[in-house]
Image 1 (tube, helix red, strand yellow):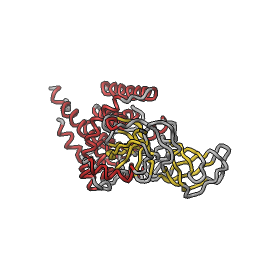
Image 2: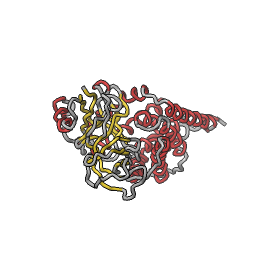
Image 3: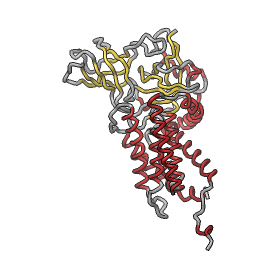
Image 4: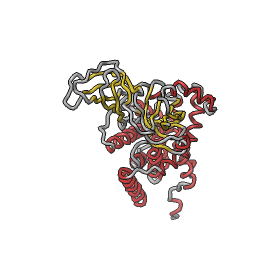
Length: 242
Length: 167
């Protein structure tokens, strides 16, 4: 019994040490190695079980590059001119509690880098948070850790869209307290000048609610994301501007 | 009096190790890939439910180790802070191994469901706090609670078989 208690104590101390270590300097090498082992298993499981579910579309032939290109075509058409793209398929989801991220079956070997914009039918759904050789973790815009610089297309007002959890609308903080915005206005990405970041003018969502009380620091609103996050399937990643 | 005859039969360690790895990995693949592929939520805590059932079957020495390993796998493949899942899994293994059970195959199902769901919510909550957010309750709570109950009801009857398999 004493040995069991000591063992538990060691494991708890090890856990706490890992937490402190990760908070100081997040390790990507170990996570990348684990992804290389787990992702092929996830890919196989998804291929086997997808015909029974919502992801049945084209799955049988998805390993075929031609079928992959066909599935990606309407999504890649949203990419701004001059951007290289990679097509991935969602093979795993981490949407427990508030978390909202998915794993795609393409990674560094396809040119994907951390910070790349990820598109689904409709527009921007997230950014690459972590990348391994043949897989990448995508932080969805609905994850509370996600913040995306945005612009209300009709008025040009700038703001920030923050995730509020799976199934929830995005929280919008518009910088101008007197901003003239209306329900139904389209919200697009503010964009950056980085070669591998989020380009401007990608659809992010549609304003679905307005906070009537404007405050000095800005104005709050809610926006419905462009795509249903629980039914993501084929995703296109903007890898680099050529 | 022979002391050997009074000693409880020990666990076959290699079988426990291999069985734990296979069970946890299978549960992880089901939770992260199979459930979303068939249109169910990945919030269903299959991995933690497996930890609970293994801890109930194999006792307080194995439970925390399996929980630690399972939690570490979740940490390494997810977006949360490394070590949070391991800590939650370890504590879950300790608690689950102490759930009182009798010979009925679903004995302890209520407590098992409760600790499974609590572990899933705790994992999310601690990760949210460490990321500087206030944890909130969402619709996923229904998936977590209902999923935990379903997993426990399906897995718990294997407890007697699991005990026999490692003797």
